[in-house]
Each structure stands twice: as structure tokens, then as C-alpha cells.
Length: 311
Image 1 (cartoon, rainbow, N blue to C red):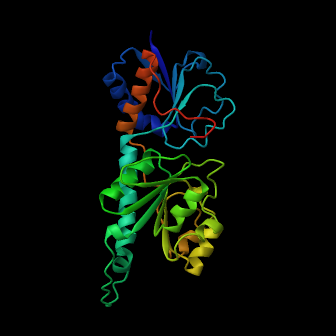
Image 2 (tube, rainbow, N blue to C red):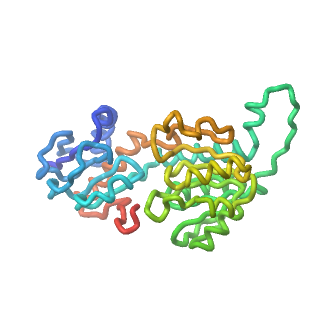
Image 3 (cartoon, helix red, strand yellow):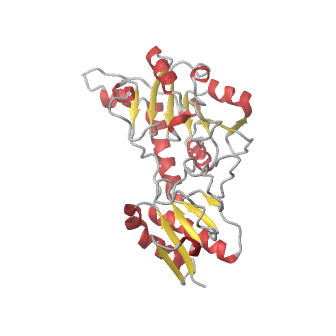
């Protein structure tokens, strides 16, 4: 029977993904298929979906076996009351490696104090010797796929890495904490803090004034996770007071970040335009094709979202 696959994302994504998806489907042994942006709802077997795509009402797709998200984040789709089929989030090798490279680069940048040399070309001989990585304490909030990979990369470089997650994890060479007491401990030792939690009702404003106050004075915050994890007013106040030395932020409550937002002009903030990690069409297409192969073979889908947890 022909597998009917609806591509429910914006037109520019179709131009980007059509050829890689066809290659991936055929590579997964799926040769009898229709891949299109226009399939009658009742005929759709699988839906490749982006939360900002054309499908917002999932009720008509009553025979759809799974919605396969193009993005890692599912916060803008999981709460849709019409979503009745299983939802798989994107866990993509390319996305993961991109995040590891971005996080590692910015942790090293702050650890080594590179900004002072890059921006301080004023004739002053600044010979500030940084500590070794093994003497620098880094905490990562969120030990899912991305957080665990970043923690492992930083551990490999020699950093003293602590990880925190809602449920207890066990990762080789990483001090893993959980619960409210564990969060306070992770924050209390974080000379560099990396935020890689998903956006849920429980994680919004997880870094508020009270929790920022638990961090060592002069700490650095790096957020490539989700914008709403941070109380922006609390962070700006902590930066103004010098409690937090610098914040490197890749994600924001409103994107693109409005030109008038105080982050742009703050001397202790680095803004990057949501580039920490992007889904790569070739590798993401292989993840989608594998889930379709699994669905047709009666095997469990990969990376299913738990609606109760929100990720």
C-alpha cells in the first residue's frame, strides 16, 4: 500500500527538504510513497510538521499514524487540543553536534576570557592567566539529548561539570543532581551556567531573581535553550549590579529580538540570532524516514513526546 506523507511546513522548508526526504525514504527502503504538501486529510498516513506550518487543526487527519516534528522544540504544538496522534520531536545528529559546538565554543570563550583580548586592543598588555578547565566549574541545567552531549564534551575538555535535571540521571564523569535541593547546589557552584531545559510550565522563569542570587558572584550565563527560561528583568538587574558578569543569549521570548530590547545595548550581554543549533535537512530527513519505516513495520516510534511532561 502506498504510504501517504504530508509535508506540513512553510513553502521555503519544502524547497529545502523535498529532495533530502526523498533520498532518506528510499534509503530506508520506502519506495512506494507519496510525499506532498497537498494530500486529502483522511488519506494522510504520516505528517512532517513544523509548529508554524499550515496545519493547526489536526482533527481531520484521523488516520494519521504520527506527527513528525521538524524541530527539537515542541512547546508550540504539544498543547494543541486537536493533536490526537503520537508526536515525535526531532532528535537529529546534526542538530546535536551543532549545539555541542556552539556551547563548547562559548564556554571556552568565557573560560579563557577571550573577549578582553578580542575587544581590548588598546595598547594595554593584559596578561591574565585563566585557570585550567579542571578548575572551572560548569553547571548545565537539562540533561536530555542535547544537555548530556554538551556535558560530555565539556567533561572531555577537562571541565568540572555538574548537571541538573528534573529526574535523576547517571552520566559517566558528570556530577548529576535532581530536585529542588539539587538545583540550588548546581546553581551554587556554577561559575559558568548553561541552560538547556525544554520550555514547559515548570521551567518558565526557572532562572529568576532568587535563583540568580544563589550563583557565585561574577558567574556567566549561557542560554541556547529557550528564551522563557530566564526572567529577563531579573537578569538585567543582576548584570547591572555586577552579580552576573556576562550573559550570552541565543534564544528570546520574542524572536527576532526587537531592536529596542535592552539586551542589544547592554555591555555585558552577547546576543546571537538563534543559531546555536539548527535542524540539518539531510540528517533530520533520515530521522523522519526511520520513524516512518518503524511505523510501517509495526515498531515503536523514536523520540515520542510525553504530553504530561511536555517534551
